Amino acid sequence: VDNSAKFYRGYQDRLQQMKLIEEENERTKAALEIKSQFLSTVSHELRTPLTSIIGSLELVNNGVLGEMPQNFKPVIDMATKNSRRLANLIDDLLDLQKIEAGEIDFQMEPICSNDLAREAIDSISGYASMLGISLELHVCKDECQIMGDRKRLIQVMNNLLSNALKFSKDDDAVKVFVENVGSRVRISVEDKGAGIPDFAEERVFGKFSQLDSSDVRRVGGTGLGLNISKQIVESHNAEIGYVSALGVGSTFHVDFERLEVMDRDEANVENMS
Ligand code: ADP
Image (cartoon, rainbow, N blue to C red; front, side):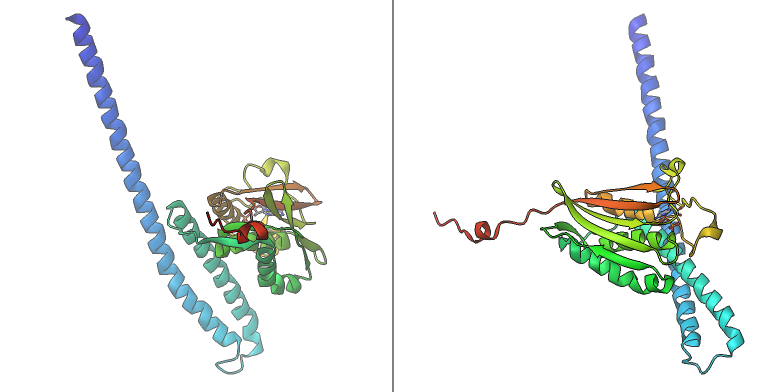
């Protein structure tokens, strides 16, 4: 009788514990749901008026409303720069939110890695020449197709390139390499910039991680870019990493599984039996 009473009490305790855990899980789930809704509402409510502010400033800047008095220019430039910064932050927050909620529908298609790198470089070349930094592309001579979402991978490349530019010195070159490494295609972005200290390794891909003081930066950032990039890359079953030395520079790479393209002869053979 004693034993069965003990067993029964143990059983009751376990049930109680399980109930508490379940309640806790429900509360966490509800809190996460509220957080995610809050973030997306706030972001949208901020993003829409901001787009209109940026548009209005552009109208003033482009002289569409008539010639702007010269002494207005620094103020308008400052307002434009800061509203763009805010827009970038909101876009990053929205992206992060979507990725973490599993709401991004990746549009996978075969992509030539050389084309991907070329497209990303083209889209950022204006910014690079403004900074006086040259961009070099070293293409892969062999097959280098991968499966991926073109738009999202361009976003990753843009992030790596804009970081490389941001942390480079004037007249430096930023190089992009596309190469086959075993069964993988590696795209890397090399700069001769500030470099990343060893202690920061854990933090580089974290959220809101900025390692430097803002006075050495050319342009502000959100500290979310690499976190978003890592999540996008990992959704492609690929890997992102870097090697870096302080004062020497950094090379970030993304390794994708290469898409085996069928041999032309093999592809033409139809099995008639
Ligand atoms: P941010 O918006 O600040 O660029 P990221 O997530 O892209 O955010 O990068 C996080 C931090 O990692 C940067 O603030 C910077 O300190 C460091 N970092 C990233 N790329 C480089 C690079 N190419 N050279 C030096 N530091 C870098």
